[in-house]
Length: 340
Image 1 (tube, rainbow, N blue to C red):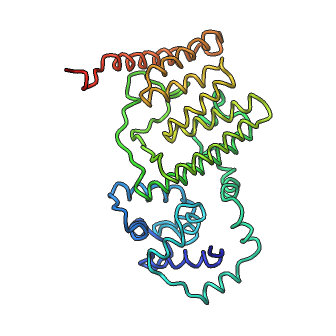
Image 2: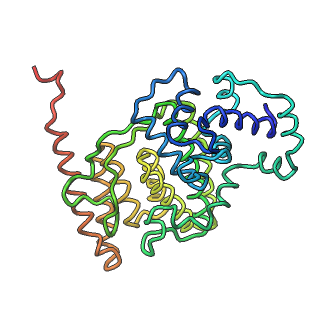
Image 3: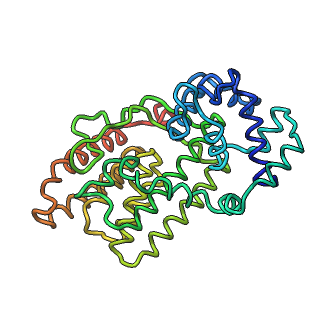
């Protein structure tokens, strides 16, 4: 494996290769050329390229130098975050490393830089964004009624956001991330949130769940769930699993969100919120009968809770009704093999 100095020099050579105008930044056109060049076997559509560029320029906004684009430091950070393989990309471009430059770069690397390189980038990035977590995280997380309660839950959310960002960039780069118009929330009165309506994505994201990248993501996600389970109290564990579920739901990882909400239901079975959100996941996944059962449990909990949850009853009733309609459509569906 290349040393930090050699690795940085490789990234610099890649950057210089595509900084066509020599202004010290990779604009969208230059960045698109880089993405295509290092993935010679992938036939990208214009939509896929734009999705990758949008994600890069949004995620690494701190490294965007005006109209010039992504700086060298920004490109280095993308590789540090696991968005690409430096050695593979360098070889794919047919570049050669100047050994003198590489030696100088290696020699000039300080002990602090080496320590940083060997540490978890999750920890590094979490520290960098700690003061911006409210701006970066969905509005629900800071809601006084349904948001995050415990400080350690924030750390879990920060780490999960980073894991999802990495997965998204890898799948978008490999052409695996797909999207299409999404009308699951179009039913009149449907509520994906408890409380005021939030902005709703018009695109359904389809994640590739069979590849190595997703398997790695699931393993790391399991570690975050383990941290939630190891919390000091049942209430904190519940807070952690609810937050994990909601982050996953926001990113349309519905199957994994459902796992978290089900765990939250086990921790606090008489709480309305995990049943309601589990029902939403099941509905989006087309499992209407199971969604109905979760909404009925949410309704039972809301009615038993008296005035505490009374204001949520209309939303639960609406989603229950929509789930019942979905279940009825399934009952009247006749598989083609049985039509004769």
